[in-house]
Length: 332
Image: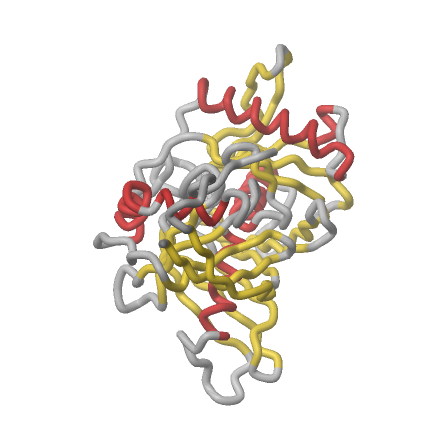
């Protein structure tokens, strides 16, 4: 019989399931190597926790690992309904909150914030968690540098030309204003947005050479960001990623990608904040905090994303040897 223990959070509405016991610690010298090990050895546990009846098609989570070196507090391997991602902003916020709540890291007495350093497959990120009466409150994380791949790339999707912006924020995202498709980022239009997201991802992966600037060895478009412009620096978005999965939050790493695009287009300056709302009415604050030219003539945008995580439960999941569903099923 398999038994797996987790602590669950949501960050701005998006679930995050942290595996705390019952599985082997992913092996390797770095988190990127541990991710590859988990892909080969822990995919059945990923499926068990993401699929019904123990999860659902939009579940997200992680396996804990040691950091790459003494400069980190912890490492993590992210997973979702279709595999293992290289980045996860909402998960980073949840992990930093969890690290303080469990005592993995200990803030100084009377501190008003504490820094938690997390090694993720795309690199090292640092989260600063605000403390209210000693308890975690909002957290902001400094992501790996974000880079615009292409502005206004044209792809033929469903027999029509679409112009999209493609940027890296720990993974590659394409961004398009929902109004260009005659849609809005509202629940009523979500089925159509999922369909467009799947089609855009397929077209991008067939036509674009998207190689991640890290040592994960990954290629391809991870997600599609649909957005509405609400004001000059205020947008509402929904990200469709992996196998038609829908981010309930404003998408942390996707927010970094949007910030890079807006910086490149001159829509947001260093030091300014993007108010980024989600489909369910929650909010991240995204900030451009710096820009450095890269050796390949592409700007490296330093971004910071702020949100809040809340614990939703602690669970022990069981897979009995005679369970006819095994690790479960996906139904959408």
